Length: 128
Image (tube, rainbow, N blue to C red):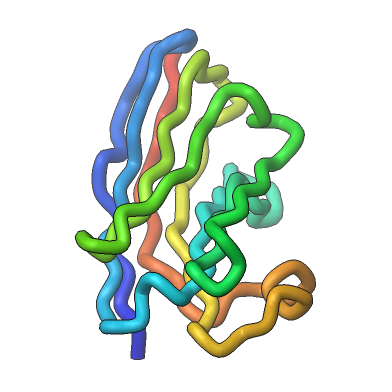
């Protein structure tokens, strides 16, 4: 069982920046695709950003709503994935979830299926 623990959320003013971290368990972290999702009140959970694992060269992908304003990265030595968000807007307010696929998932499955593991989520609130 993979455990994911988010940190770094909180309150930030519109236009500001915020960084999230997710610490993951497991010795196969470097092989696992990781992602950040978010869920705003009354809305469905949506993908924010994804980064594949070493078998697929750490490819990144971003939601159109955040493209250019956020960066996902990973530190395999620390079993940690990061999300840096800039120029935050009120509509970025949501619970942000760290997620992971199993290390054996092939790329086509990563791109077409939901993650296998989820963190508990962390609140990000953008104020005016």
